[in-house]
Length: 515
View 1 (tube, helix red, strand yellow):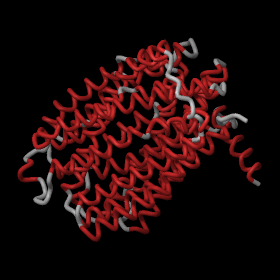
View 2 (tube, helix red, strand yellow):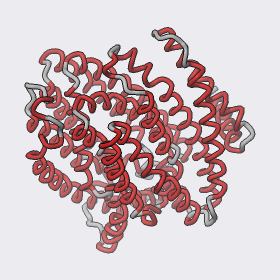
View 3 (cartoon, rainbow, N blue to C red):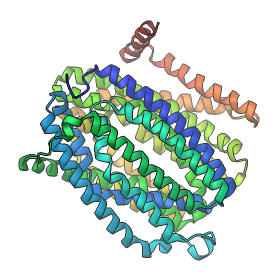
View 4 (tube, rainbow, N blue to C red):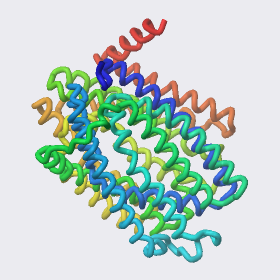
């Protein structure tokens, strides 16, 4: 009997997507409930600190340099071939590397501590009086570092298309964490003690899942062989390319909060963090649904069947455009009305122009999911190693300059401009040139047709709900319109496309099997 999971790709993808969707919905509910209590108990500046420290530690994760992705990519083939020895060698190497990374992150993280007051505008007057900036940061750092001792085992579950097991465990873990956080917050009304509870529970949860993976793959972890020198050299070669991707993506996603805190203020960062949290929840739901097939893409690319890869990619890309369009229309129409009802305080609302820029930036990322997934699964990140660094540099420079002149608008002008100048056109070019060996002409035709239809759907939906009064009942009416109208427009526009017919047949087959 095989150690590894050899169920069908579609079946695995459905399990992963279903588990991840459940997890994201539950996480969304718990996050909103916790943040609501957080805002009621503590002042808004704490939200700003939370967002700032999270982004600083995300930048520190650069020490990982993408080596985890490189090893995950190399796990696909030996898992597919039931090569237990090679999987064990990779896991042993992974474990040792991550121990070194944990040490590096700790040292660099501690060296940043003296500079914390300088990245908060007017820190002396804006920080809550009971805050010890250094202690709070040290707790955040400890939580971040502890994860490196367990992450490598979780990667094995994901690469073996059993990520749904990890997700189901995380559902239970998050419920316990939420209950503890709320209890500590209510009883002690102290942010530091809430963080201490969080790190303790996170450590316990990581130990539990680590023991489970060790038992599940006992044949793998019983082998203590080292990875051969030539294979370590190959991973280092891949990591050099992934390092630039890691640096680029980290700067793109983790500097907004720092720029806002340093140039605009901690309170504004607190307001901004609410929008980021909601958008990140939507992005996570989207990514979990779409990248449930990520491990399946890896196995498919390893097979070398070019025609099958292209067929699966076209279906996958069509679905990503549909769902990203629908999600972003929903965000554009419902984000401010939701925050208005949720927090019932105008100080937490942003201007519609800023919201539109944030959402357009989100759309540009989500609609590239097909190409990004294919590039990562096929190992083509080596062909695109300098692009993320160029994109990140453009983003940082344009954002800082634009923020100086335009305030909060400038942060996302930089993000949008850097994406359009680099990843937007570069990723499709690489996929079609090196995998399909043709020009991406058809890709762009389909992309821009979908974009125009999405834009029309967005405008019609926005004005359809624009003048509906405020209130919870009217909010539900708006939500119903937002759910129905864009999808109805998409169906009218695309019902003749082969990709639409593929998913329609798939749903009919799934319904028949369910009955």
